[in-house]
Length: 172
Image (cartoon, rainbow, N blue to C red; front, top):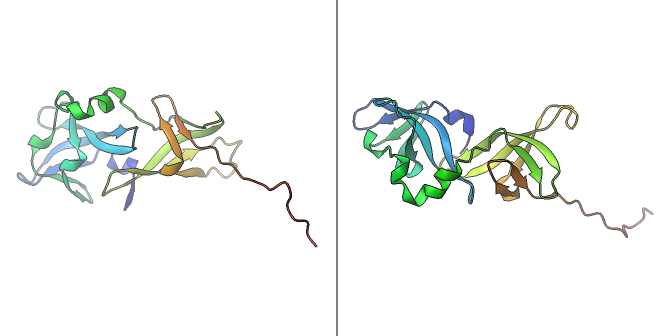
């Protein structure tokens, strides 16, 4: 099932061992190479540390009111995650970043993204356009296969080419 990224914000993390809340989700840790949420930065409710990470592989179940994990001990300090060092250093947060095409045409700002709650891959991005471009105020929705690159400064998507044949048949 797809879930909007805002539904993860401030979500409690519950320990199955103790039956209590052990942390709160702060923001996702996004791998820009494959658009996967590798984990979440969390606030530890015991030590009030903001720099711990909950890896998505350690989430046992997604509940209506939080994430269930085995125990508080699965929360990891970023320095211990050597495999994710580059992702942690990049610190990508695409929300509010401009969305542009490969030909540098500005589409708007990324306001939200939808995540598959089983694989934690970003599946859709929602782009709000300026009032001049879109009178209805609706968002532009783009699929993950249209995304070319995600950086700290922008999100680049494929150009949408509508091919019109130069020798179209004339109506009879």
